[in-house]
Length: 254
Image 1 (cartoon, rainbow, N blue to C red):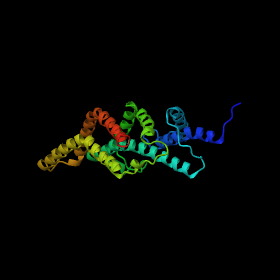
Image 2: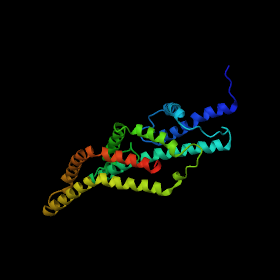
Image 3: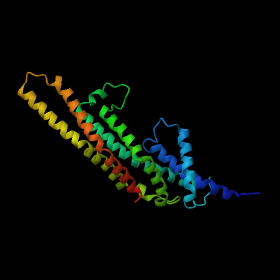
Image 4: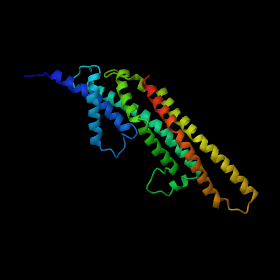
């Protein structure tokens, strides 16, 4: 008959509990996986399944009593590490969404956000389109598998029980925030250039023929030209998105 001591049972439970907490924190913050449409029960079951698969390959966790203050500190460590990794991927998606907002502003689509009562955030159509495209590209580029790979790698960089001092480094988060603006500007720069020349052309027309109502054809012209430019720009979105996700992970997992 098999018999286990209390210490052995706590060690066995801890071997699956710490990876489950870290996985659950990533599932709560990473894009797509953190969507409200995904039931909480599914997220918890997925976190437990990931922990069950990772636990045999991980080093033995520190032997601490589960009800002690040290165990609560370790639990907070796992949540902080998982949330930081998920937030890093979320910033990569935010760069694409920000580029869409800038593009929509140049096209004049931001005016519709003031009258869209169903969207309290006032996102324009171009921003919503690029956000949806980035989500589909995230799945097509196996971004969810990259997140799981980063989760497994994080146990090597941030072992259970060690203080993750690198997560508190403000320069890493500042660098990630700077990447959001630089990548968003890089993605939106072709559209900004096209719309700049369009506005210059409309200005010349309005100056040469003052009797024309520039608003009657200027807005449809800007939207049409912007949609064409957006259509030509979308095929080049996958490479910078993949590079940004990899760079976001490398900041913490280097």
